[in-house]
Image (cartoon, rainbow, N blue to C red; front, top):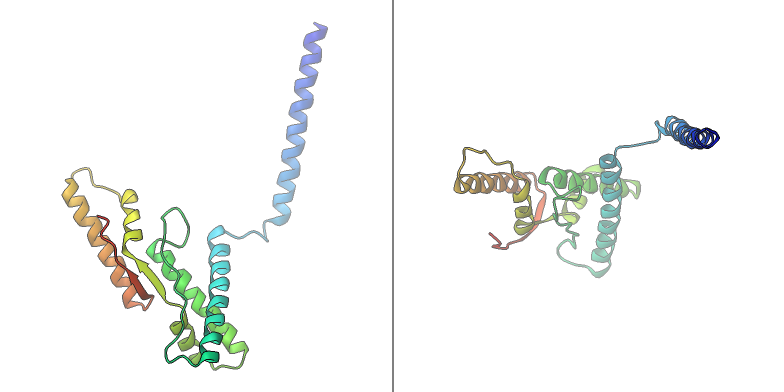
Amino acid sequence: LNDRIKDSKREFDFANDIAMSAGRSLHELEENVDKLKPIEEYGVKKSADTLARAAMHAFKIEKARGFDKPLFISPENWNPESYGNHPKEYKRVIIESRTAMKDMLVKTGYGKQEAQKIADDHIQGTFDVGHLNFWRKYFKEDPKDSPEQTDKKFKSWIDKQAKMLAKEGIIGNVHLSDNF
């Protein structure tokens, strides 16, 4: 009976320690809730800042060397497992990067319209068709469709995404790859 009492006390102490630790974690979360941002919001802002700084550097090199055409940076769509690679996310990262660059240029004395034009010229996406094809494994299939119908729907989705990105001026460079 004494051994059971000791075991019960150890279990109680252990559970009490866990509860106190969870209470501290809850308190810390409550204190920081106003400071926390969704990863998407933080990631887009961080990516936009990094890309805008890289584009500013390219712009300075272009001016210093007297290039005829813009020396642009060209982030590429990559794998579906990372944020910013779905065509809609990719578009947002490019647009936010251009906005960040425009804001940097305005702070250095450029007018808003001129700064926007410079940013649009210096941040242009590399659209990789083969990388977009990585999304195939996530494409929701209709059980009634044959594999051929599913492939046709997926190709239609790719076409729609490419047209959207091109229409909105996101694409400045294309990588073509026939990887089925």
